[in-house]
Image 1 (cartoon, rainbow, N blue to C red):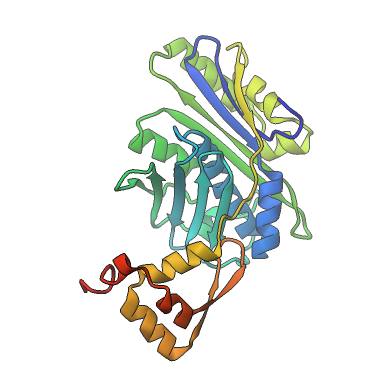
Image 2: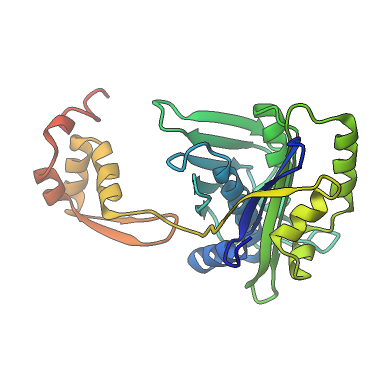
Length: 303
């Protein structure tokens, strides 16, 4: 695994078990810098970003994207993570500052911040007319169990997901990461038992990373006895792909009538990106003057 690569995909020698692992420390640090999250929301959105990044690598094409959304009814509100097909992610949390007492075991109470009364939605945009949408009820709001449940129910793939974010007392991120292990069709009972033993014996993700373990070490420990091989390694980051063109396209999608109504209220629209906080100022008169002919009757006419 190359030095600056922080994600890898590996497989057992006989092809029965596949492993995805990532050290998402830099991703979560950048998210915390942009969103100024409190400790428990850093952990919650950090875990979701970590999972989404690995799920992005699972997509068949680098042109595809995946959105993972949680609405759990907790004080953090809606959490959203979007990954492209190369594992680069961006995320958003409705209420970035949530203060809650720690759980009895001293850990951040992510489940209480996220809430357990709601759903985990996975939207895969594969370039088709309609995206693929899978939805499962939340199990715990702790996120890893919810992702595990999603794979078991929506994709019928036996999966183990482990995610962790360690936040320092000064709210900086010490380390973050995760792994997803999946059984492919044809895995024997013996292999399943061995894998379960391995996973149960593993320390937490944050304990491994804080101890200086790498993603490759996680692979070797999770798939001990399976002669794992690395298939690919990647460098994944927090990356927002917002642009003026995209903002203008979004405004045009409201329909000409709605844009004229907005222009009458204020000729300059200020749009801020929920993923990176960048502010775009759009002159609505200019937008209307350059309105494409084929968009004249698009949205807003069929209401």
